[in-house]
Every structure is written in C-alpha cells, then in structure tokens.
Image (cartoon, rainbow, N blue to C red):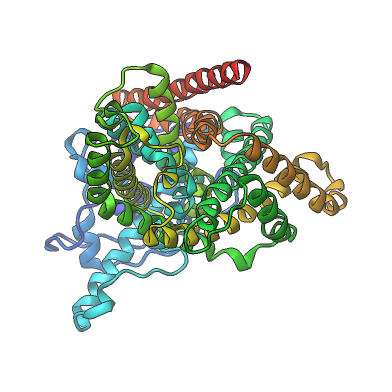
Length: 560
C-alpha cells in the first residue's frame, strides 16, 4: 500500500468493525521528498474510490479530488510512517499538532481529518513538482525570487488580515501603556498576539477543512443550532456600528488639529466638524450598497499606520527632551506626570488594557474568507498566514505604543495624536493622511453593517423589499454615532468596551467553542486541555473587563 492510501483511508473500516487502517493506529508523516530514493518503487496508482469525500456527499473544490502526480523516485522517498510521539515540533507544526491515531466521534472532526490529510498531500505534490522544475530550469534572479502576491496566495492572505486589524483603534495603544505600565503593557500586547494567533488558526483551519463559508456557519456547527448564526450576525452588526462610532470620534480629533494648525488657522468647534464631515462625506458614501471603489482604502490605512509608527518612533527623543525641559523648568506639567510607569497593579486599568490589546488584533471577521480563498490550504500555509500577520501587527503596535507613551508619559491622552503640537509640519501631514483614512473608513464599515441589520430584520422573501430601507438604516446609524461622538470624547473607553464585549466573543469565546467541538479530540490530551483552557480563561477575563468598564463608565456619568 503506497503512502497516499495511508491518508486516503476514511473511517469506513472502523465503523464496520474491521482492523483499523494503518494511518489510524500510527501517525503518518511525509518526509522531505528531496531525500535519498534508493528504496523500491511502490505502486502509485491509487483508485479514485479511496479518496475521501465529505460526509454530505459533496466534494470540495480543492484538496479532495485533484489528482496528485508524483514521480516514482519522489514516492519512494516520501513513504514513511512513524508514531506521533517520535515526531518533533518542527515536523508536527505542518500538521497543526493533530494526532491522527485518536478516535473521533464528531462528523466535523472526521471531515477535518480527511481534508487536512488531502490538502497536505496536495501541497507535498506541488513541492515535489517545483523541485523537479527547478532542476531543469535556470536559477531565478532578482524579483523572481519573491513569492507570488496574487489572489489566493499566502501574502495576499497576510495583507488582508493585517489591513483588517490595523485600524484607527491602534491610536489608543500609547494610552494602554500609560494605564498598565511598560512591562505589563508589553505582556498584555504579547498575550493579545498569542491569543489572536491561536484563535485565527482555529477559525481558518475549521473553516477550510469543514467546508464552512462564514463565521455564522462555524458557530452554528459548534453550538449545534442555527441560533448561533443569528447571534453572530447581531454581534457583527454591533461591531460595525461601534467601528463607525470610533471613526466619528477620530474625525473630530484629527480634523480639529488640522483646522487649528498655523497652516490653516481656523477656529471650528469639534461638534461642527463631526456634523459637517458626517453629512458631506460619510453619509453620501455610505448610501450605495456596493463600495468596490473604496477597497483600496485598506491599503492606505495600513500604509498610514506604518508611517505613523515610524514617525512616532523618530520623534520620541525630541518629545522627551521637550518634556524634560518643561518638567525641570517652569513648565505647566507636574514632575509626577513625567515619571515612567513600569507596572500598574490596579486590576481595572489592567482589564481595560487587555481589552484594547484584544481589539487591536481583531481581524477574525475576515479569517473565514481568507482561509477559503487560499489556493494552497495545507496546515503549514494556514499557520504561517496567521503567524506572520500577527507578528507584523505586534511589531508596529509595540513601536507606536512605546514611542507614544515615552513621548508624553503621564500626559498621554486616549488619542495620543492630540498630544502633539498643531504647528508640527510632520504631524500635520500625518493628520491629513489619517483624516482621509477615517473619513473613508466609516462608510466601508457602515454599508455592510446596514446590510447585516436588514438581513436580521428580513425573513424569507422580505429581504428584497427591505433592501429599499438601506438609506434609512444608514441615516439612523450615522445620526446615532454622531450624537454619541459629540457627547463622549473618550475613544479609549469606547474601544475598551467594544474590545471586551464583541471582541471577546469574536476573538476568544466563539473560537474556544469551535475548538472544543472540532479540534479538541484530535489533539493530545495535554495540548487540547491547555489550548481550550487558555482561550476559555481569556474569554472570561474579557467578559470581566466589560463588566468592570461598563460599571465604571456608568458611575462616572452619574457622578458627572
């Protein structure tokens, strides 16, 4: 029996009570195809009947029925079966540490095991073919060494996740370091990155290998009921409204600094700016149901955030010198405001900082589309797409958060861009670029949010009729967000509440449910219990953060 049969065998043998298939009793590992090929060549003609199909009878467009063509030498060198415990982490990460010898009862788990095996086999076949082509072609030079960036490539998936996470909310990261301190802030930021990576891998893996096309389908699969899908739609709608609210608040902050700068010298109230820009820019752009022309704003948003992080890092020594002069001279700030805070033991501040960190890495609404669009969907590709995207975000977040806090320390505002002087030319340019991003980012989030609200209200054939109410829903959301943005200027408080409620559900709670349902039985017991406990405890911590912040906000409004 060749190595493909070890993987292609499904659960039929076990269900009929026969002797279990070899790949069920041992963990199959494909070695590097470039190894020696002096073994005897096995028969490489695998009947199509041995290929796995989904339990529903439908065949996925990839990883199920495509013919894998390997040369006889490659087949003989890749055939190797070893026990799970004999493999190291360097080999197991390609298979997401799944143990194929563990029995599973869930239909979703069985489907995932079959499709992951086939996807990894397909990726191995592609690697072998590429090695054979390199042997007969000239060595690549220059830009040809770079991996492709087309649709469905890993680089495209990485950029999609990065652009989804790196929004205007990262401007509150310096305030997070002010609240928690440098050491605790870095630990919380790192914890947010680890949790985001784990949950992204869970969502992407389960979406791709269980043929789930949306987050709602995954949650319904985990909960065993269609009600979970409706709950996902509600949370995503609220999440979109909250994103629009944050953009409205940033519009007041950015354009306030722009119009009051010496380059313009206009004295326009913050409330007037929010109302005018919302009425002239945000509302008209949000009325169309399709915003294809604004898809390039995601690129501008990522570029502007990266530029802002670099500018903040370069201006940190200058801002520190000004702060030292004011603190030691006749400045207005007290010496206590210029002391560095390394660790803050206040649990309320730590919980708010944790919420901001979770919100900063929340790219999970696009995890399912990225996973289903990958042309090469083996375990290694999914792991790398998630890992590299989170690493890129962590680097720029740490750079911006530390640079902003070290520049203003105890005086850091919730939107730290407000700490910079209005007559700074470099910051003026940053504000102008970011002003365009927040103006166009609001309709990008608002239009699909309105469509989700109409989808929740519609039943059956009423959906087409309710689509005519799209302008009314957009108008109501814009008016509501404008009123709240005028009433409240504390953007970090809003981000903390949203991160600890909707962010906790999307990033932590639902991935933990999906992991328990689909992947828990396929991992070794210690690893499975550790991953599940980590996601579950983090979700409980997020809900606790929401309770504390909601209570503090309520008490603050009552005392005011």
